[in-house]
Amino acid sequence: MKVDLHSHSTCSDGLLSPVDLVERAVQRGVDMLALTDHDELAGLGAAHAAAEQWGLRLIDGVEISVQWEATTLHIVGLGIGIAHVPLIEGLAAIRTGREQRAQRIAESLTAAGIAGSLEGARRYAKNPELVSRAHFARYLVETGHARDTNAVFRNYLTPGKPGYVSHQWAGLGDALHWINGSGGVAVLAHPGRYPLNQQQCERLLGEFVGLGGVAVEVVTGSHAPDEFVTWARYARRFGLRASAGSDFHGPGEGYRDVGNVPVLPAGCDPVWSVF
Ligand code: AMP
Ligand code: MN
Ligand code: MN
Ligand code: MN
Image (cartoon, rainbow, N blue to C red; front, side, top):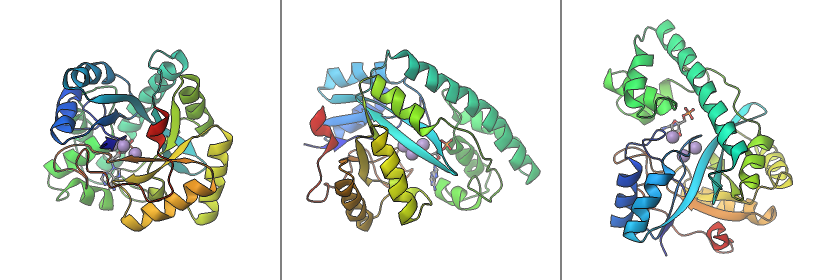
C-alpha cells in the first residue's frame, strides 16, 4: 500500500488545488493520502469529493504552527474532526497572526532594499488568509533575488537573515488539545529539521508524549536516509508510532513528489494502522 501522510494544496502554500493534488496522487499510485495544509482545513471538502471519485483514501489532516520555547515546530494532525469548534477557532486565530507577521516580514525586506514583497507574496497566496514564507520565497525568485526557493531560504526568511521575524504561534499544548479533542492523532512533523540538540529533542519528545502525542514523522522529504534511522530509534524509545509523508508542495518545488515516500525502517509501528 502506498501511503503519503503529509501534503499541501493552494489552500496553504502548495501549488496545486486540492482536486489537482488528489488527481496527481492517484496518477502516482497513492492509496492513502493526507492533505495537511498549514493552519487551514478549507481544502478538505474538495479533496474528499475528488478522492471518493477516484477511490483514494483521503485522511483529513492539518499542519499546525507551534512555538515551543525558542523553536517553531509543526504538528500534523491526522484523522481530525473538521467540525471541532476549538480546532476551527484555534486555526482561525493562527491565520490572523499570519497576516500581521506578513506585514512585518515585508517591512524587514523593505529595510533590506527589497520593495513590494507584501503585494508580491499576496499574488502567490491563493488563500488570502494564508500568507506563508513560501509565498514570499516565490516572489524573491520572481524578482531575481535567488535562483530557487531553497536558495531563498539560505539567504532570506530564516533566523538572522533579512525577512525573518520572530512570531508567537500556538502553544504545543493548544495544538495537541485541539487535535486530540477533535478525535485525531498528533504527529511531530519533520523533527530532524529543528535546530535542537539531543537533550532538547528528548525533552520535546517527553513533553509531546505527556500531552498525548502519538507519532513522529520518521520518513519525510526533510530527512536524509540516515535520519530515518535516527528518528525510528527515537520513536521506539518514546513509545511513538511512525509517520511517513512527502511534504509535497508542488511539481518542481522541494525534493519529493507526492507518493515518493520510502518505506519505514524495520521496527516502526506505522501510524496509519490506527485509521
Ligand atoms: P511559514 O509557515 O509561513 O513560516 O512557512 C514555512 C514554509 O516555508 C514551509 O512549510 C515550506 O513550505 C517553506 N520552507 C521553509 N523552509 C524552507 C526551506 N529551507 N526550503 C524550502 N522551503 C522552505
Ligand atoms: Mn509549506
Ligand atoms: Mn512543516
Ligand atoms: Mn508541510
